[in-house]
Length: 534
Image 1 (cartoon, rainbow, N blue to C red):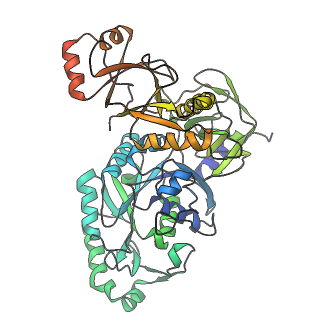
Image 2: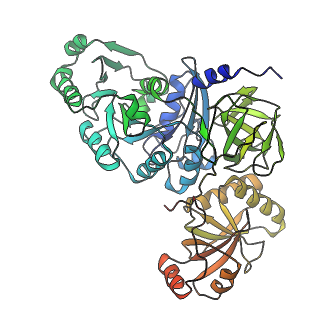
């Protein structure tokens, strides 16, 4: 094992890190942008995203069979690469609202976020929810207006919507030349320089970028003088110029324009992330005390994923390094149990690809293989004990009984359900009415059930049958409350397998309120102090 670095060296290494997530509504182009960023950093030779949904076989961040078949991101992915002497940790998140819980966990591990907007649609429901999470966590947000190569809305209209809807003041860093659907180039707001992009087939490779001075731009592009100069002057007059303090305190957002599908503006966004996004800073522990970067190693497990390597069936926990230097082989302590955790099998992650990792610093993401003892929200540390705040869970709104389709494969069925529960893919509840052979699954959205069904068949060889239940609301109760509530109609009390908590489930909120009025002394509380209602 190599010698420990001095504290100042750890801080210097942390300053080189940029760890961020891309958030958006479904179909805004999030996975396409993720691949384009990796392409422009020379981390991949050719982007895998294609125009249509059905043929996305090469997408680096969408590696699960169900993702490729349906053309949607259903699990988060980590891409780590180098760019301009910096280490970039890019976390691609699920766009679909049914997988909000996975995105919420990812946002617990980043220092900044890129909010991706579709130029024709602007702010959409899922984007608004995710931005609220960023705001509650104090995460600075950069905005990338995507799909400027197809017809859409006016740039000023989009900026006004951002400010009026979420109260985030836009600060354009670049500005489009030409209306959406007729993108002629992108202008630097502070210098007036024009960038014109060579378009490549489907944006699969990087095209040449030519830069023109304001005088050259005015001569080359008539639209530059006709509209862009006036629009930039208007932005300056209203104070829509970049201000680092406002960006970092979450009151304003730098805005860039482009078309990820064609690689337009992507390299500029990557530069902005390196130049503007914050480096890792001391993270507050569960008591509210910041843990300095140069203290001994500590980290937060924000995701657990199995099935990344079909040939090994291992389980990988993703650890955000919060302080200190990580070295492969070091023995850490699990804050929740006090038990040791060996890190012999530590890996750097790039989508589905994994390589052995020898060291990591604050901001980096470490893949810990064979992490059966770890769950999302766990803290690991070396030498100096620390506990980071738990990651709030989403209150489930959909419930379904799951049974093995083949009675002869009950061992595979039980192992698969336990593993998916441990990953946080689904919440597993036990029912006295049905027994262990028919647990109840609780989910934020119905697509989570499809993931369970697909993975149970593909990874565990145990196809399942799902039987929807009519419940839509869950509350925490106790043993005395369970005795009362189990006598009521349109409700049921279930046991959460992960911690033994008793959950009362109701068909709807009106039924919950009726029973609450009837039994005012019965405990019916939100699931957790940090539970999130969608």
